[in-house]
Amino acid sequence: VNRYFFVPNPVKIDIADVPEEDLGLAIERPLHPDFEERGNRTLVFNSEVYIPEADLTDGISRLMDAVNVEIKDGNAVFHSKSFEDAREAKARIIQWVPTDAIKAKVVMDDASVTEGLCEIDCNDLKVGDIVQFERFGFARLDEIKDDELIFYYAHK
Image (cartoon, rainbow, N blue to C red):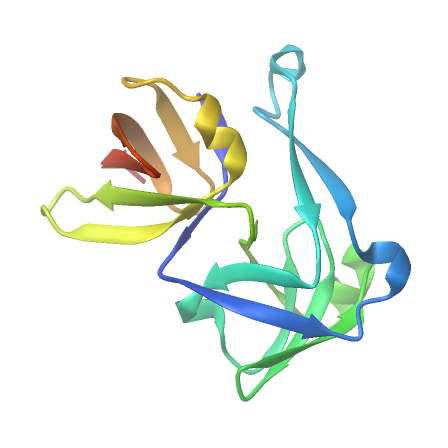
């Protein structure tokens, strides 16, 4: 199954001091790391992104495959770019989606609903498709509403 980013309970952060050359950065991620023939998906990084509310905690975090940010009191400031810098700073690696993300709901196995945003490439999915939301779990697309995708959680 193909992999996508899903940000549960998203909060928008506006990252201060991002170098000009990193704005509009196109980040290519494989749809599946073991099957390169499936192609890539592209996330465009800008200073405004959504992250999970649970990850809005003080400290240095790496926005997966993008940049490192320092979060303090709910504010984010550019820290560095390289993965090595993130490792050295013992940064947490967190999911993110650009502001063009689409609304998604995941109905969990206990019937609770997790609201969130998934990357725009999820617009290419069809009802019945199974995806792996990285660091969240597997889910099946059950319904496509006007501006929202509704998934059913399968397993971790």
